[in-house]
Image 1 (cartoon, rainbow, N blue to C red):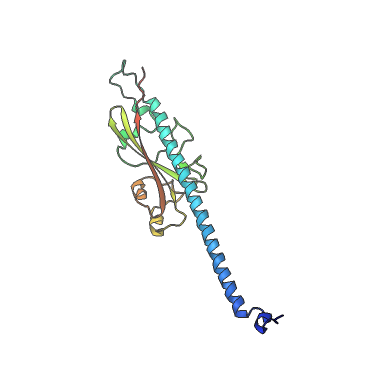
Image 2 (cartoon, rainbow, N blue to C red):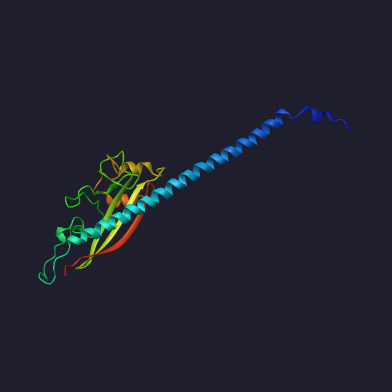
Length: 205
């Protein structure tokens, strides 16, 4: 039987051990980075899904609001009761301008701000507000309004901090009014979803 060589019997050198540990560490760092990226992507996908749900919620609210825009054309052909709606009425007073829909006495508890689960919260609730809604309404025909809905939320990492601070969002991302156009152009710091729908008057028979 052949005797083992002195090198084989002596084991690994310190340099070999250090190289093996280095390769192992690089591999572990790659796994950690991949896991972080996966968690971030999952979070982004979840937020986009919730934002889409919020967008659909506001379209449904506008469709329900149209139930108040329902003058009986047979008896009152010249009457337009759009002013009796909670939000659709702004198709005339704020035509083609983005605005934050405020809570209405006709629809108490329904706001432009939503928490991470897609439930309504007060617009100045900075601790719980994650998503904010803007509307833009324009009357296309006497009995039809074009409704645009956009929902936005902060990115995990703000790309342009000074611009974000310039928005003066003192109490949360949904607390500021009058700066909707400025916010709408800030794609560095916010994610956005957008939808458009036709809201028709519900004419009584």
